[in-house]
Image (cartoon, rainbow, N blue to C red; front, side, top):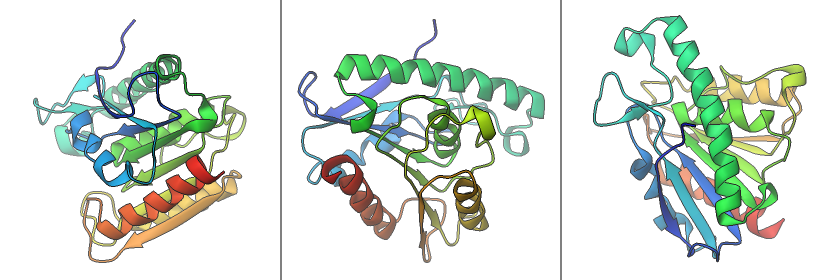
Length: 219
């Protein structure tokens, strides 16, 4: 069985009351997002932060990883991208079960934070899981791969954050994704970071902090 290598920070193993899973974007790795724990730990005490590497080496950046290839960037085919994405969904789904057992933290005390391709993966996998997590934060992503109808088994609250000047994933995806989620019954909030490109801006991070506190700690 293929599993995912990951990095971890925060509460000691066996001592976590909450779990935040951080899913990186195309060409990056787990450490790229794990640094977010430095901005979240003070408001999320007793929380473990885990950040896996995607299962495939990135075609266009061999030092990084990808959840699936992107045809217009790396010359892959749509079929290759779809096959890899399906494999990533299955691998991540199993890995999330492994993490829940390893950390002894159930879904109601777990949140996911994704960036770009990590957001797309999260929006595909999490709604297919029967147990509803506390919340999902998606930076700079799109709901293009959001499952439909009877494929959706859970509807956690979702926060979508996007940079106004995103050159990789146009900011128009923010409202389109929110509309798609709301049409499927998800409680959805959005935030547009003015003057920000394909990255996480300080204002977006502040909104994410508030969202995670509300759904992980206060609820």
